[in-house]
Length: 599
Image (cartoon, rainbow, N blue to C red; front, side, top):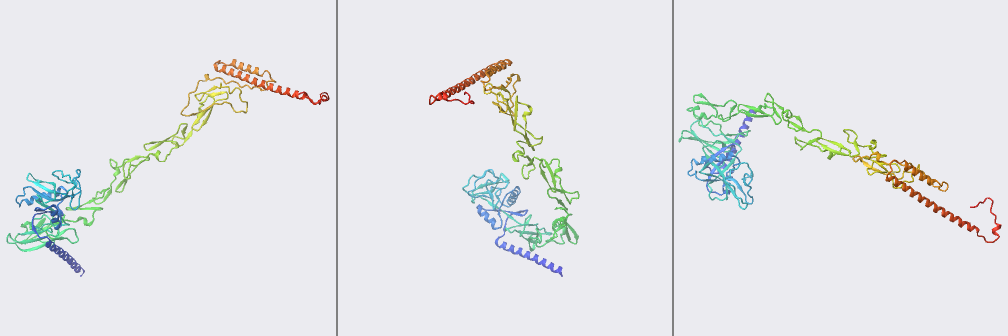
């Protein structure tokens, strides 16, 4: 009971689709009057050719009225179809070998300028499509933006098979006709008769013909059986979509015009592949290996070996079998069904510049330490400038390929071989100075002992001949007149020869009490004489120094003499004041005390 109900529902569904298609065909027949003409169908489109003088807009409107548009020629294949259609029409039309100019769906609106480097030169296809790779211009289009321009397909007697594009005004002057294109969702195979008769097709776009290589969806077929001129019993069929499928089929499966008289001898019984003669005028259609008989019992289609999902990934039907396909990054295993990963990193030439890591179905490129990817998804690597990013060094940084080097300023040295820290260099350990050395951060300083001055080279010491050190400081006092200079480690002056340095004079302490030691000054002079006699180098420097000592001694003696004169004058004034008295008796009545002494 359940099977009977389901079969009835399926039958009603088919009848509903059939009635709907018939109704749509009737409505279309009311709108479009059938007319004799040539049509060419291929793939999922049909192309028609129409003669007559029309403007470009009038031709486009006529194509639109029948459900199409002016023909596009976006590829070499479509251009070949246009040539086939024109060649087919010329067989039954007088004068078609003359010059023919047919409108196609290529135009340029007003205000859009000529573009020399584009294949379409600024033109665009009707209903969209501003650019395609294919073009076949006879000459460069006119360079204008102020007028609308339309394109015709032109054939000349000198070049019948070559159809060139020519632009011009969109008016009807000098135009022979136009080409239309109609697209469909499916096609039916042409009907094949198993006996004498004829088939006449009427297409949805109003063209009636007896010859079609493919019949567009929605077309009707009139079938009449019998010898030529005696055809009888006309039947009508429609090309409709197949239920639960994207294919198309006729409303009746056939065979048509079959009879026991002819069997398989007439047009192979209408069978697409094999016709099996069963005797007594009976026959049956059969298909090649890998194909199965369609519902019309005439045509054959490939077996769907992929319906059982034999492949791990994609399955492609092939005549007599199937083929398994794998996605990018995988390849077929030995059994031809499963997919295994492709190790791209094991190839002779690695896809990565440095490090390649294989992953399932793909690979990843990595960079070594000190490098980074050139782009987010790049397989190339570029060096990282560590010195410009993190300043990893204590003082100076030098970038290298994949790494960096640290260095120090003059007067410093690295703490270790691979260290980034800098330590001060103690230059005084090498004894660069003649007398004394003082270390500083990044440099050092030379100084001299008392009585000596630093030479211009900043290292050697010379005797101080300025006279400011004649009286040298005693113990506990700071060194007088010490000279010093600071040296950088990168600028170490050359040392002078030790023989050119004057010997340091001995320190002489001079007493300031010349009254109690009258021979002090002479002793000082004697000491100077002895120092002069003991000197091994009697040069001008020693003479000047001795002269400075004499002048200094004379100045000191003058100061002492002046001090004695002042003291003597004060004592004489005090003595005269005491001699004065108020009366004569005071001179002999005054007696000084025993303890008092003469001043």
